[in-house]
Image 1: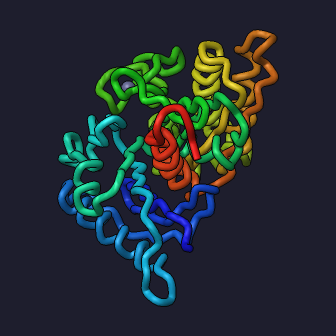
Image 2 (image 1 turned 180 degrees about the horizontal axis):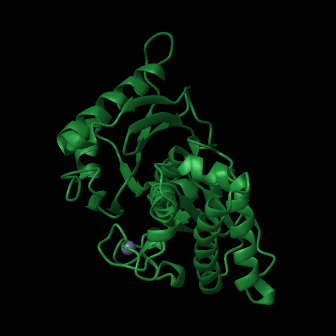
Amino acid sequence: MTPPLVVAVDIGGTKTAAATVTCDAQVGPIQHVPTPAAAGPEAVIASVTELIRTVLDGACDRDGSAPPLQGIAVATAGMVDTRTGTIVAANSTFPGWPGTAVGKRLGAIFETRVRVQHDVAAHGAGEAWVGAGRGATCALMVAVGTGVGSAIVLEGRSRGGAHHAAGEMGHMPSRLAAGMPCPCGRTGHLEAIASGPAIASRYRALHGGDAQTPAVLAQADAGEPGAVGVVRDAATALGEAIAGSVTVLDPEVVILGGGIVRASQTWLTTVRQSVHHELVAPLREIPLRLSSLGGAAPLLGAARAVWQASDDDMPAGGRW
Ligand SMILES: [Zn+2]
């Protein structure tokens, strides 16, 4: 008999990915479509629905019979109420996305269980399942790209928090970002100095030109002093925030992911130095590992929530 499958979907600002995921973390072929984020939530739901159907069609046997669907898993940009699968907040890339009952909508269409998570939380849960954090009871995931996000994964489950904001590391105060405007409207937050766009805009403000983030990171690795300064400040600020989080949580491992982590040795070395410099002795040897699953990580982590929910639904007193 064909084993049951979860269809996992990762809704990003520019593209949406989806694939089947089995209970032992086997990921099927990953399908991609553009995310019609600017067209509003109805367009996004319609696009996701079609993509899920495509993945399900691809998972059919040769005789056309579909494998049992265990549920649908969604990783998405924006803050998520994981209990209801509703979007709580999102940035301007996703107009109208807050308030969208993604879980209920997809559950009604496909008549199955749906679990929805923030994409960084799903990324962390995936890495903690079969990636860089495999085997860790408590892992801290930190993702740096267009923003700075993090996730706390405890026993395989990401923690959303009382206000669905756990892991919003980008909005921690940072001494190095004092006075700098943050996308949230306040000043002095980590994201204002440490995100990819912040690195580029700070470089341009200090040194002129029109360099984008990859160029600034490359120039830093080539030793250009202006770029070295900006990249080191960004990495130092991030390292201090990671050290603060590690001191509170005492996780077994920190996983670094996102677009920047493999783009600059200067950046990575400085993050490591900054974390090491700030931590008290018992915490100093905490491993800082790079994420290892690439684009499959959020799909795996989102899917794991469905598999774990299936476990939870079993009657108390026994499992079979
Ligand atoms: Zn902020």
